[in-house]
Amino acid sequence: MADEISEARSVAVPGATLSYRVEGAGEPLLVVGSSVYYPRTFSRNLRQSCTLVCADLPHFVRLGPDFKYESINFDAYAKYIEAIRAAAGLERVVVLGHSHHGNVALEYAKRYPQRVSHLVMIGSPPVNIAQTVEEAEQYWASHAPEERKLILQRRRSSVNERRLASRPPTDAYISHYVADAPLYWNDPDYNASWLWEGMTFSMEAIHAFRNLYQDYELNWDSQSLNIPVLVVMGEQDYAVPHTLWEGVLPKLRDVTFRLLKHSGHTPQLEQPDEFDHILLRWIQDEGGAKAKLL
Image 1 (tube, one colour):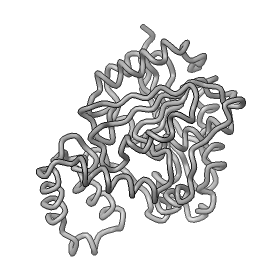
Image 2 (cartoon, rainbow, N blue to C red):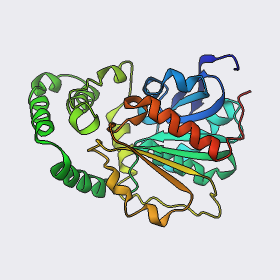
Image 3 (cartoon, rainbow, N blue to C red):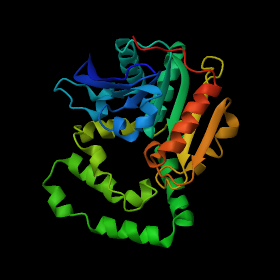
């Protein structure tokens, strides 16, 4: 086994500095979204088989006063990811994104197909926000046990809205996400606050990022982007239900779909052994990535 790497590096972009953390040994895996949040979601075992390169995007960092929020778009994000790939010394990569970052990973692959060997989307919606919310409400109503629904009511009622009103908006964002554990986690009382420790971001950037998905449509040209795609979803994900993919998968080619029964929105953390097995076996079966870390 190659010696493990563990170090933080950064790339400057207009109005921001994007960090990326390099950890592990083996097949390089470029994880887009955050260099703080996402390393916490992947197992130690995966780091023994892959070199994780977890990279920031502007909506999850401290931005400078000259940052232009209109630069939060798929074209700019693809350029930022490409700059990180080059700075990390990667050739063709397995690119991975969780939730809406899976869509960002796809948009990067569409713009730089020569740089991507495999695409992994975890808990990602294949449709726009309105359709995702509508399907989530229906899935919650028809599939969530009554006990889970009661837990959500209890957790939401325990949030001190008056106290949050005097705090930064990002505190409220995190608090509401943590309180909504029954929507996001197999364990409806899971405390996800530790994942957010040290995260610094602005709600203006978060809103700009979410606006990318108002009219979003998942698609790609299989002639120009001819790579294997892995989609991993959790059966207990009530925020981005796996049922969203039912009408989309038949229209796509070379897509492997896996559903983890005891996972919510973050299968790589909730069922790490199963997730690692699925990912590593899939990469092996699809020929492995022709990438290396210099």
